[in-house]
Amino acid sequence: MALYVDADACPVKDEATRVAERLGVRTFLVCNGGLRPSSHPLVETVFVPEGPDIADKWIAERAGPGDVVVTGDIPLAAKCVAAGARVLKYNGEALTPANIGMALATRDLMADLRSADPFRPGGGKGFGKADRSRFLDALDRMLRAAARDAAS
Image (cartoon, rainbow, N blue to C red):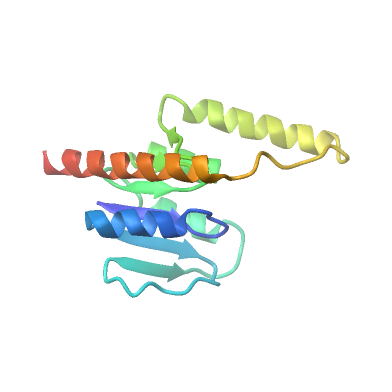
């Protein structure tokens, strides 16, 4: 069992690391650079080469049953869900086989709308304290459930 964090532009890296350290879960923070490596022996910072989706590919090649992936990237989430991993978005929303199709469709629709109207104001709502709190609670529950499943 491992925790994979898509760490580029991730607003909850520190929170994910704290939860994983407390529960004793091996963690991989995967990024293109710019992160200070953790001194905790269970946390490894993985620096991948620059390029589109290189960090996503690294995670997708490794994540599988029993693992937990933290990402805001819906295509990466879909690959990880298909591989049997549990996936959590930064706001604490779990992506599962039951809802990943809708998440992909929504992502594609929004991309089409943005490309059809270049003057459309972009951006979603801001990331707040409530999102951070939901994430912490959801990650704790998800890692504990993954550990229980691995033990049985």
